[in-house]
Length: 183
Image (cartoon, rainbow, N blue to C red; front, side, top):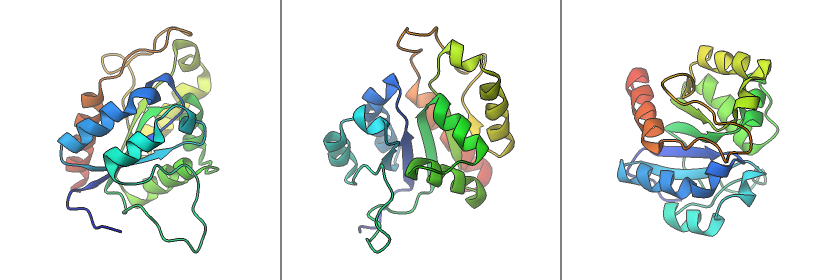
């Protein structure tokens, strides 16, 4: 495995309509000096172009745990951005559920003190569920920067393909989280 010169950013991608254009986020991260690696939830693999993302990053898109004796093909992360973050992932993450590679990495990252930013991609009906608001608060209390709320990002109505998300907002928040943690 090559040792990257730039800091390594794991971009955890969940199964939402925004996942289809996550290559835009990857390109912007590269432009800001990151070495991005994409980790997709098992359902998100159907939304992304795995071959194109592998070519763009130079690393395989991981979506499942590797065999115990297999070498790890990804460098260790310096920060993690969960973008787009689905309703399911946010709720499982806050509950400490680690039943996928993506959830395993982000649940562990809290305890490792890595800079963590999450950009929810939920609709207004999902956001009105009591578990969602509670879990956004739980993750914030655990040190995760949640890009959600009035003046930050607000969900669109159901079946509207979602409110667009500003990739630069996510990357700016990641820079701020790194500065705050001294990473």
